[in-house]
Image: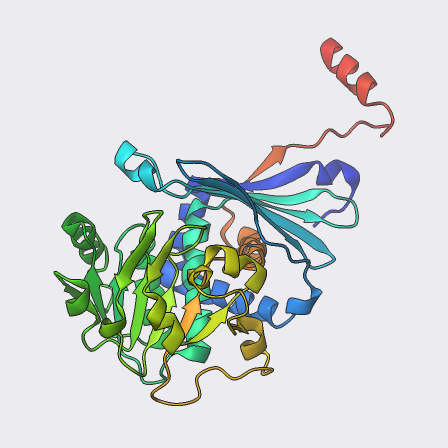
Length: 350
């Protein structure tokens, strides 16, 4: 990359259309697998990152959040909303965009849509955790909640972990039918189910991903047997959970960043000192993940800024590979850095 000031004034921008071109060029499953490797690599250098719980502005309708982090060389953030009622009004429940910038001079080096990219990185984070926590012989996954994230999760577990069957359930049969159609010809055996109990029958991995902002009980304690891995990704803000408290008490719980997860995750239902293990410690070998066949492992995932950083870093590295982006004239670049007003005046004459 040309680092002269005049060149740095132009910032690569990946639009929604560009992101779809990137996904279709690489392949959704392959792209998730590659993002997973970036996420795992960044978890391995976890201690380098600035970390803070996301900055949230809550309302009765939903939440708007900023998710910042830096590894000392590159700064990144994501703007993201979560509005459960949006779907009924014809809007996306979650939308997002993100930025990467250089730490040494503060100049942005990437602006990207992140509605699609967040779905990809969420699926990628799920399989990173499952590589270390799920039963090694797992072939069947239950997917409770068949909305916008469903297909990405199914493809991720099929591609990375070798899941052969996905069992689908949603309170809205149309969502299940949509997911089943989209997963045709993917190599997965897709089984639409009429109840949550039917969906988890025979599943070694259970993924919960529902949208309603409420203390919900998607899984009751009697539904969960020993030896399973629960990938809980729907409980992601205060007042929003999916699992009965007794399931948490029977599980070994793994999280991204405890100060954020205790506010937003499933563990908001537990005492503040309830023991959890940070995922980066498992990935680096500082803590044990799955230790026996009867253990229930629970990944209480709320999404963390380093994962978005990893995904943006991945996209930046694919720009030349795919070529799907435009250069935005985003930063004022006067010949004399002290003469911003003069630049504006000269533009009037031009």
